Length: 115
Length: 118
Image (cartoon, rainbow over all chains, first blue to last red; front, side):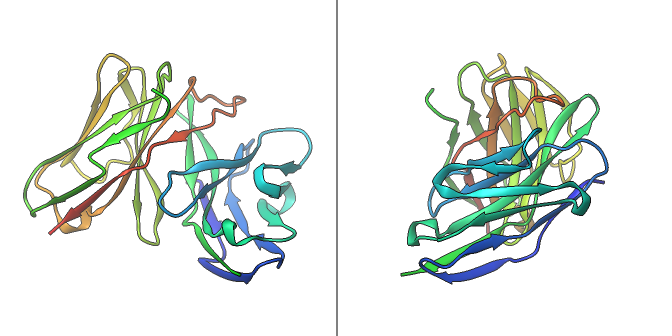
């Protein structure tokens, strides 16, 4: 069965620090990859996605992620975090089964950014 | 509507009672998904609808859980004889089109229904 692993459950950073959140998935075929973000008290929203082409994907708010097929990874990065980036981040991968896709999510990483 | 709407936003119930959670997807979205979010567990897939049919019910935890969708729009998730382990946030998401391989099919999420079973 397809699965998604996020290595860090909690990350604490100071403003202006660099961020990298790890995500690995298990699936040998073609994948679509996503990062969703959930700000405190808000609903999940799409941060960025990869489905083909340039493996370096840029999303909203200065986030980017790199798809490395050989490592089955899709790590999320941001060069300089802000207090407003405090949120929970979910990596997700498509699972193609029965003629349609469904998103399989990782357990999430809670990021706290201190001023 | 402008976004995915879920109700109630909070529900506290006693063990053994039945609950119904409602999802109103974005107008025109044919695909609808239910997920469950438990503390530290990420998002657990429950069921998927394409139109009114549910080709994948594999994530429903037990036969106490059921869901239906009518008119290709509103969906209801019903939990019978609730147990304490059912406490979680139940999230609904919708997508513009049939989420098939090759289409990215972004999911739009509602704010969830927080269920607490005492």
